[in-house]
Image (tube, rainbow, N blue to C red; front, side, top):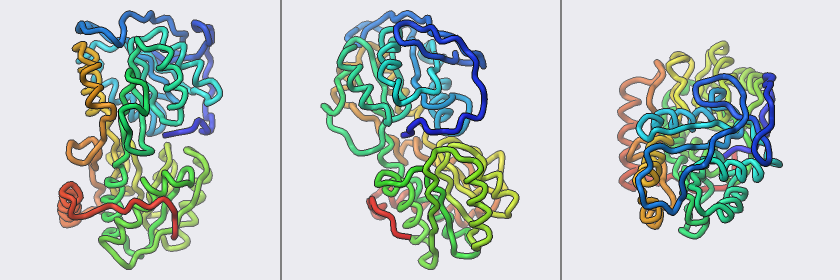
Amino acid sequence: MKAPVMLVIGLIVGIVVGFGAGYVVAPSGTGATVTVTTTKTSTATTTQPMESISMGVVMWWHHDEGTWSPSHARAIEALKEKYNLEVTYIEETGIQDVESIIRTAAGQYDVVYVETDEFSEATKTVAQAFPDTYFIQEWEANRLNSNDFPSNVICLNAFNVGQLHFLLGAAAGLVTQTDQLGILLAIPGARLYRTVANPYKYGALHSNPNITVTSVEMNAYSDPIKARDSMVSFAEAGIDVVFVNQDDWSATLEAAIQGMYTIQEYIDITPYYPDAMIGCAVWDWQIPLDHALEAISSGTFGEFRAQNWELMLNLEDGSLRIPTWGTVVTEEIQDYIAELRQDIINGTVTVPDITTWES
């Protein structure tokens, strides 16, 4: 999902001395940085149940900062006890180093979890070289065939996330008092036009044909200064609801000051800002990850993967959902969105699949 272009807002001090190509990691539940010492103990070809699973999680940012990386960390932490996971977070992974980092992890852990499909080419290369290691790869660009990745890779696929953004666009269309909506789009391009910008716009048009949507292209996954400045400009232009396709909370902080409303994604932060948010588009990786880990733990990975090379996030099982509504969203609007959700599931409403943007 993300290329590692985020501003470094803190100083992390550690000793980089890892095995092979070194890297800094943060063990689950601590704030310290240490070197990897975990030893790989099992193989992807095993047919025996596993009593514990060691997992190296390759992250573009930090497991406890922002919204994207924590969405993956929360899923892993929720399943930690169930599968006796021994987790190491490998953070601040640079695109120039990712293949060597994944390669090192593949030699040390039972499972390598790669949280962004920006790293997928490196995963493919390393997975071929380490057939006895399991890989779990985030994906969202398209639907996959069984041979798109090596047979020891399962993808958690968010291809359908536009359906969730459509629902939140529809809610925005009903909440707005000015019929003017905004969007802070992280990285412009066909993917985010298809999964974020257009579903949000056409969802709003579905509920309110009078709306207009203005997009500001951020060219970064996190730029707090530009985000807050853009929110001020939106407010001055009469825009009162903004979809925030960013990995930090700065736009919502400014929305609270300006008397505006935001929608954010990945994790649910609405309870922190109930009066400044419509809701959040939550990507819950726990649900598909549970299936993948069950196959690994039970020793049935090969059989399972033959039928499940991609595990889809979707509206039906709640892995794509809006957990909490802001105070501005009435029960009537919530009922409308619930019915629209079911219409999308049933196929009576189709979310447009458009890869270009016209405001």
